[in-house]
Amino acid sequence: ICADSKLRPSFLTDKAMEPAIKYINKKFPNIDFRGNNNNLTNIQRQKSDILGATSSYYDSFMDVIEFRDHVYELLNTIDACQCFFDISLNFEFTKNYLDLIITYTSVIITLSRIDDKK
Image (cartoon, rainbow, N blue to C red):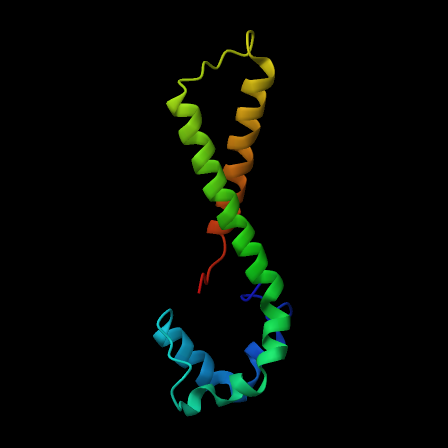
């Protein structure tokens, strides 16, 4: 989304925001917002607009991370239980397992296509 200028949030293309964006990219993830940094002045002024524009992206990434953690936990449980996958004996279980793997793989592939993960 950030690679396509038509879909990019307007504050990312604002010339006045360039110093702040460069500073954040340079210091990420260890950014000190408490200091008197002139680069971050524009961000402080537009904080509510920026939060509104990026909250759906943030929530989506958090959902993906939560999904990934649940899948890891479930796969570890399945491994610990030494489950038997035979489609003729355990059709629903095997089908649901394969659906989970397909969904997980699709999410990870989609996530890997995002160029700028910062």
